[in-house]
Amino acid sequence: MAKRSLEELYQRENVQHNLPEKSFFLKAKQDGWEVLRKGWPDFLIYKQGRIAFVEVKPEGEPWLKEQQKIMLSILTEHGLPCYIWTRKSGFKKFKINVPFKR
Image (cartoon, rainbow, N blue to C red; front, side, top):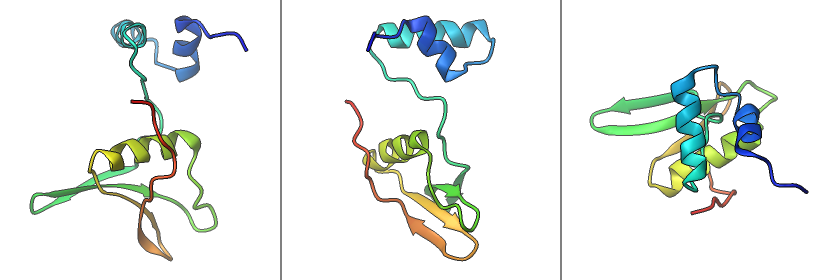
């Protein structure tokens, strides 16, 4: 499989037609960084000096997309608590299942 050009990676990530963001994205990739724009949890909650990230899922669809798994894994590995929440089940702590490149 041919290696994708930076421009193709930029297009795949669907960075808005914002020249500063595009410039940053391409520079970060050139410098060897992995860049994620998709997959951020729905909420950051905080209370009395504590924070957590929460991904909300409807009943019957508790599956995470691949970008969400990667993002939640990265946040969790950096010590940030992440949860999946549904109306029926409430909060369930996210368990890392996707290693990421360091």
